[in-house]
Image (cartoon, rainbow, N blue to C red; front, side, top):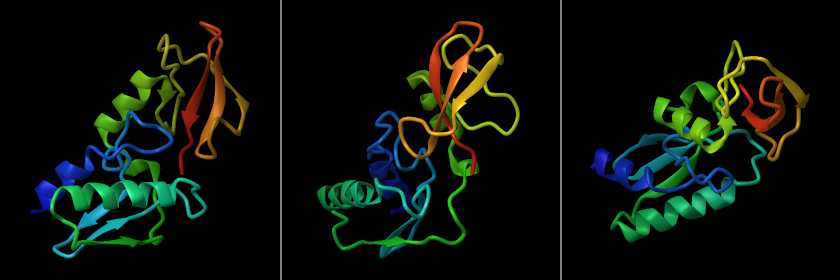
Length: 143
């Protein structure tokens, strides 16, 4: 049953970055017999209600309408929970996945990048520019 629910939820896109699912991002923390446990990327995430609605619709449509959705804030979500597949999808979409070392341009793979603004297109991203190809891109912030 857990694998079946995870399979269903792996098709629920993140509302702000639709190429990754709520499972790819590590927002889905646990699936129990009676509930799906989620943790938003941060406690003030404006997409939390949309994420819950997407999960609810997917559960209902797949015959799991009796499952609750529980939001848990502790421990807080971390970018370490993004799956390798999720990181690859972010990169292919033009968003640099979080990195604790060098930021890699998702367009040309150069590490010669700079932060332009700590604030990107959404609160969980920062705006960077590649010095090699000159292209701006979002970096998914580490936390």
